[in-house]
Length: 180
Image (cartoon, rainbow, N blue to C red):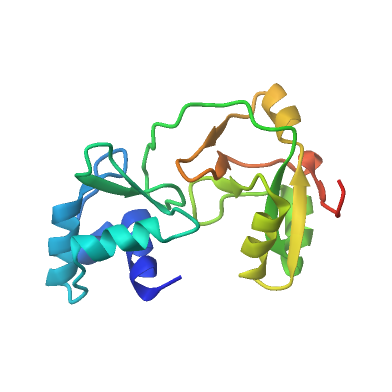
């Protein structure tokens, strides 16, 4: 991830005050205001650079409003934001990538959002493995998402396809192995 993308993530997910911004309750901020704030804090970026960064990202971390005037992080917030996502029935299984050294805690207490507001889950094991690799030797966990949903856990899917849930109790967690 580029420095500019990391800085945008910091502002739009965690610390908008770093550049003197306040996000609306749904996490949106006017693009023009964002660009002015970034410039005022020594991080200039043109609208074209911003659009290129967003469109060129595989992860699709940021969303632009239908009218093209607002921007927000698609998910991953640590601040109190209501993305307004509709609860959805998840697939039978979803996947979570983590580092091997986290396994004891996960199997004892389940998956917790840690510094974020919700746990992030992937549809594809390969995507989960890539996430786990960022934290150490990767392990992919398979989560019985549909069973969780049937027991009342609420799932939603962000604009970028990442599935979100408040937490995953340990009884719904298993190891993913090729072919399962």
